[in-house]
Amino acid sequence: MKRNKLLCIIISVFLLSCIEVHGQTIEITEKEFYQQYRTATQKGREISSRSVTKRENFRDGILSSKEEYIFAYLLPDKKFYSHKESFSDKTQTVELIQIGEIYYCRRNNEEWKQSKNWCAGGSAFGLPNKISSKFTIEVVNSGGEKLKLYQEYTTYKNTYSPNKDKEGLSYWQKKFWINEAGLVIKEESENGLIEPVQIRWRQVETYEYNPKDLKIEAPID
Image: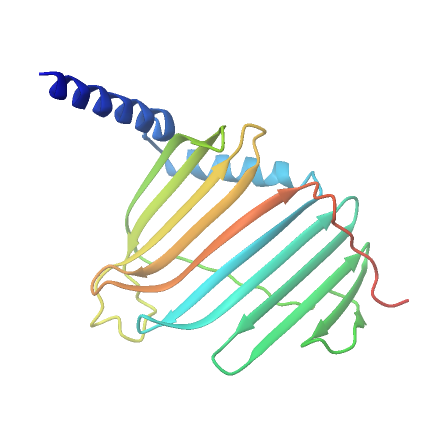
């Protein structure tokens, strides 16, 4: 009898802990999801910040390359961007510094050169033929701080794939965490095949706000 009572107490404590950490998951609309994301990221642009993104790319389910993006913004008008991509046999990098309207660029640690515009490229990602989507919000506890965790899970048919006739549905999953100050502090994204199960890429992005060691200066006069 005492053993059963002790077991019930342990289970109760565990359940209370889970409720405190995970809270209640509530389904929201796509509009609410992206409105919260835009509001939080816009607020982040009003503060000096630095973000680091680590990405893994896969080919036929095997890791093919790794990438690291760093973007820093120092008020009022200084920016730093870098992109490093590592393959099995080589690594290539591109860096950019913007001071006001002046740009400086370099590749693979060569000499810095002044440029008239943005010289670091860019990327885009779209979801053709979306099948279904689910958006949720949940309050979680991380290191004693309450965060809002937003999640999206979307399925779609990748009609741009060269193997589209053989592939089943694909998935896109996105998560982001907003702190009590209303700022995004972390993002996670992943993309791949549902049938057959196969990941294409995944990435994790972390944010710092007003980092004390952040300095951005012109590399050449």
